[in-house]
Amino acid sequence: MSARFGATYFWIRHGIQLTGNAMKMYDPLKPPNPEEWQSMDEQERLDLVEGFHRRARIRVPNAKVHAVIHVIVENQFALGDELPVKRTVQRLMSEGLDRHDAIHAVGSVLIGHISDLLGAPEAEVGADPNPPYYAALDQLTAKDWSSSG
Image (tube, rainbow, N blue to C red):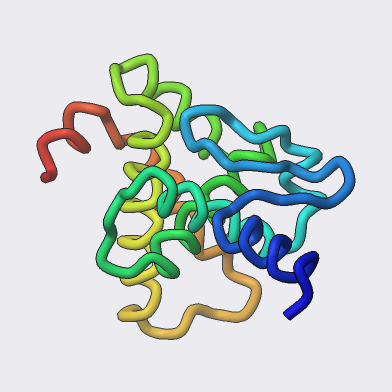
């Protein structure tokens, strides 16, 4: 393995991006720049999120699934006012959660929504499956999240 490839592999493995103007590190306590975040491909986003958790020595049951949920929530956050995710994260922070916990709280609602969709009868073609997710986000509070375990 060449020294250059080895160094690049090390930085990518630890969630540090080396190319162009792209994000170099992910920190869930700070919102990524939406344009930078959306300019990266999904794998780059996943690598950054996994790298953050590895550097912070945060143990999770499944690092890949955890990173996928982070990335989905950050993708939705980056859409701004198109979805209720950004305002939900901001509201949860105003209620006392740090941004990382707010991302986890929204992620837990997302996982519940996906689980509900998987267990539900197939919806009619063209039906929007998201109103229950948005309603659950509107009802989510920092107190409920903090007491959920």
